[in-house]
Image 1 (cartoon, rainbow over the protein chains, first blue to last red):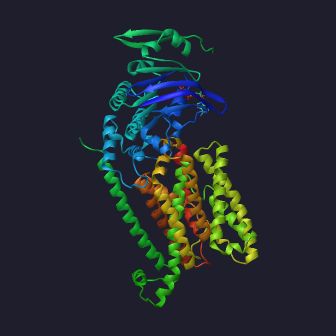
Image 2: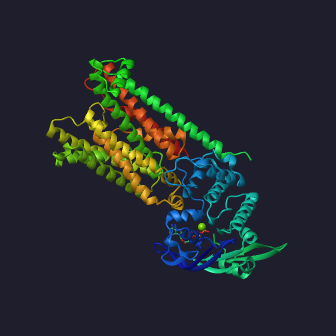
Image 3: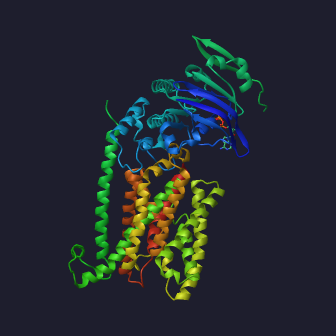
Length: 263
Length: 349
Ligand SMILES: Nc1ncnc2c1ncn2[C@@H]1O[C@H](COP(=O)(O)OP(=O)(O)OP(=O)(O)O)[C@@H](O)[C@H]1O
Ligand SMILES: [Mg+2]
C-alpha cells in the first residue's frame, strides 16, 4: 500500500491552510508530521481522510484517486483520530466502540457477530480500557478518553491510520506503550500510519520518516536525523535549540525563542 | 483470556428484550384500563373478553360492544400518537445532539398548527381530506424546525440557545395559530380550539385506520436507520469516517421527525413533552444504541400518553365539568418540570 499526495492546496474560506503539498508515504512506515501551531498538520490529515476537500491537487491510494472512493469504501481502509467527539448524549465506551465495526457490516444486521465482539475485546485489553467499557464517555479522564479513541481506530481495522496528537493527554507510560503498539500494528499489518505530534522526542524515537511543516507548506521530509537539526528547527519554530545524542537517540532541547513576547 | 465485551453485550441484549416484553405487557394492561374507564365504567375482564371475541370474529353484543368500539379508537389513537411523538423527540434529540429537543419545545408543533389553520382558511375544500391536512402540517413542521435551527445558529448554536430559539418560534406561532383558529371557528362554527392543546377524545374509527399506517411507516424507516443514527451521535466527522453522510442523515431524519409530528397534529392537535420525556426514560434503561432506544422509546411514549389520557378521563369523571381537559395540558404538567430539571442539570455543568 502506498499513498501519494500531489500538489495539495486547501482553503478555509479565505485562509489558505495548505500550499502545494506533495508527499509519498509507504506501508510499514511510521510517518510523523511536526511543525508549529497552525502549520497545517491537522488539515493535511483531514484532507487525506476525505473530511476536507482540497481545492487543487490529488491524493492517490495505491494509484487510485481518493476522490474516486465512496465514503463506504474509505471507511473500511481509513481512520482519522483526533480529540473532537460529541458527548452531548450520554454514550458508554462500549456503545461507542461497537460502532467502529459498522463499516464491515450490513446496514440492517441487528446483532453483533461473535467475531466483532472478540475484536472489541482484544483491542480493549491491549489498550487497557476493558474496565472502562461500561463507563460513560463524559466520565473518563482525558488520557482514558484518548485511549478509547485510539482503540476505535484499531477496532475499525483500517489499513491507513491517521492520528492527530495521540499523545497529548497520555502519561509517560501510555505515551510509550501506545506508540509501541501503533508501531507494531503498522509493521505487522504492513499498514500506513501518519501521526501529527508536538512532542519532538517521541517523534525522534518512533519515526521512520519525519515531515516538517510550516505555514501550510512541507518544508522538509527525511529520517529523524536529517530533520532534527538546530538550523532547521530554528527556522521553522523560531526557537534556538540544542540537539542531544543520548545512546543513539535524539533529544531536542529548546533553549530560547528568537523573539520574546513583550509584556 | 476472560472476555469482557461478550458478556456485556449479551447482558444488554437480554435486558432489552426483557424490558420490551415488560413494556408491551404494561401497554396492554393500561390499554384495557383505558377502555374500561369512562362515564360508564366497564369490567376490565369483560372488555378483554369482548376484544378477544372481536378478534375471533364472533359477535359480542350488548353495551360492551358499543362502548368499547367508541373507546377503542380513542385508546388506539393515544397509543400511536404517543409512540409517534416520542419517536419524533428521540430523532430530534439525535440529529441536534441536544437532549432538550422536543417537537413542541422546538416550535414544530406551533408552525404545523399555523400551517394547518392557514390551510383551513385558504382552502377549506381541500382540508376535508386528511392527506392534505397531513401534508400542509408537515410543511409547517419543516419550516418550524428550520426556523428554530437558523435562529439558534445566530445565537451560538448551544443546547440552551436551541431551546430558547424554539421557545421564541413556539410562542410566536402559538399566538398566530390561536388567532387563525379563532377565525376558523367563526367560519365553520366548529370548535377547533382543542387542536391547540390536543385531545384524543374526538378520534373516530376511520381516523385510526389512516393514522396507524402513517405512523408505522416512519417507525420502520427509523429502525432501519439505527446504524447511521448511532454513528451520527459522535459527530459529523465521525459519521463520515464510518461511511455515512451526515448531511443526508440530518435531512432524512429531520423529515421523518417532522412528519411524525405533523401526523399527530393533524389527528389530535398539539401535545407537548412526550417527545422530551420518553427518550430520556428509554435511554436510562437501554442506553443510547438506536436499535434498542427506538423500540423502547415508542412503547414508553405510548404508555405515557395512555396514562395522560386516563388522567384526563378521571378528572372529568370526578369533577364532572363541561367536556374534558385537553391532553396537552396534562402532558405539560408532567413534562415541564422534567424540562426544568434537565435545564438545571445542564447549566450546573
Ligand atoms: N475550520 C477552520 N476554519 C478556518 N480556518 C481554519 C480551520 N481549521 C484550521 N484553520 C486554519 O488553517 C490553518 C492550519 O490549521 P491546522 O489545524 O491544520 O493546523 P495544525 O498544524 O494542526 O495546528 P495545531 O498544532 O495547533 O493543531 C491555521 O491557520 C488555522 O487557523
Ligand atoms: Mg492540529
